[in-house]
Length: 218
Image (cartoon, rainbow, N blue to C red; front, side):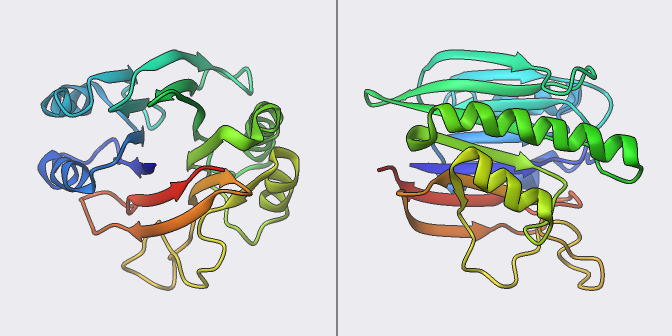
């Protein structure tokens, strides 16, 4: 199973670079953040490769989408923090195997209230993940580094593990400018899953780099 998460940057008008990378990734499932109406229209070119999709476009940084080669058994928007910002929860039927996908874009925690909202999303998503930890993938722009206490809580409460846990240098935000570079985009997978590959993608016009993970589920 190959999954991708990518923050498009809502002001990014260089659609072609990201779309080309996505199509070359050969991903099974793609989670996208900062999806605007313009980005939603640009994503139409992926419809043949990814016919199953849920797109919630917004003109602020909190539009979100999931694209899949495999059919959805269900897909729904969930407001974990009750603040109007959607996450997407889907059950994807991958050749008869049901996989729960939790796609998030949490608040940037620049003030205490936003940090509380971010942590509410993470905590409630963790509870949902824990209910099906052997078949759940949680991914997206979590606005959280793996060094933060909240990240350790997310792993403990969800029953998942960090797909890039063995990588010491793994920036996805501002990756081209090391003084600011941070790893805040993540893919969390079942603890007994086997990671067979991962890649932090190139500059595609966003302030984030896309992240791709290939794994075998337990």
